Image (cartoon, rainbow, N blue to C red; front, side, top):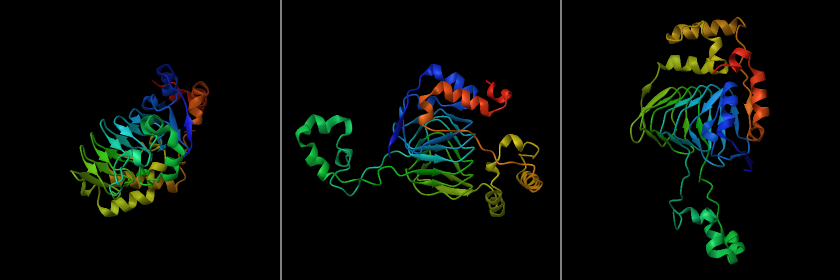
Length: 268
């Protein structure tokens, strides 16, 4: 995938934060893969790998760790030390080394065999499973120090416990703990999970849902369903930011601020 290059500085962040985009995790990223997008408002404090593909929904708090080639739904939370979507290595090739499928790593191809680059290119084989996209659903909470293998799908509403190692797909609304990660139980009874998935409350702004008793799952669902049926809720459509937008930070901050009402845009 082609990449979008950009340069961020610490001085750029206050204006973006006031407009709902907190992205210090992109300070050293420098480039993102084609198709990458961020929906505001959202917070990306975790480190983002150079050249990564990211698709991050609104109202996320990605508070630490490192992410790469990942798609997040809305309302996701990750704690410090979380690792998501790191590169895999071939286990059935001659070598597990990246030099086999990425010979230009660290500039070694040019250093050691600059006179044989064409020959090496002809013999090079792609390792297509190097870093598949990891899919994180909506309203997923990933605890401190968890490891999520690249290419895994974490279902909407799931909770990944601290230090868990997730190597396989996780069904929606599961609580996963341990090494390797295992589903301990569902967050709610199956009927409630089915109701949540049908309702898709994350389509809306949480700030339109506070008339529902959010600490009572069944009463909250009753209230939100009634609001939808009465036409009282409109799906939230947040501003979408691409790598190209990050090349003009002053313009981006102004555009984002214009999308929100003054109290939101001016909030600290």
